Image 1 (cartoon, rainbow, N blue to C red):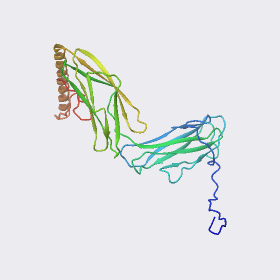
Image 2: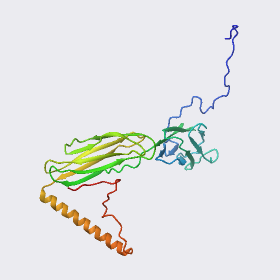
Image 3: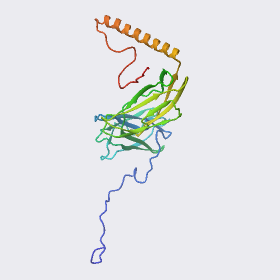
Length: 288
């Protein structure tokens, strides 16, 4: 209403919404009993590269009749793009319609979107997720620290790192409390150029073979917790001496094999003993 008391109509956008969007619910994921989607959810994992990523999604007609469906376009403002060449107006039984989903990282943030498919068998949605990820964690399911004497220690460590400028949080939970093992640190953060090194110490006080389970969690989208079983043994002096002698024999044999291999390659002997490595990216097993 203006100052003179006259009613003034406001401006409205008279463009009608698409009948496939206005009030239509898209809830089925993966399949609606007529069309099967593979993969049902699209994941783009970025570990440091800014190159465009793509994923091919296949829509298969699993029914006995030809099916008509409509693929709704993703808004132009989205970080994702869908390309396809539709095979006619109907998809025959057993045939596949392929969609190519494109994503170009613009920032190191979590992005999400979805592809909506209108079908008589039920409306489908294909969720899309894009997110930065950590580098591969070199933590096996079982870690054997070997043996040591009572009161002495065996130590190993692994590193959490990434190549993206994102701060990740981590947490290590001891599923089995064992006083002979010490894990440090149990929580913290890491990012590009600032990795976090986790150390595991085994210090037994009596002759025994014992274990402890650890669970590693990282604040990354879709990260599956890693459970590792750490095993350590405490032996007497005689058994420990036998173990050291056996290890020295293994190293000597491996060095001999490396030397022979070097002679066959023209006298050049490459470094490394057996499968043992001193690289910071691998396990470091200390023998007292």
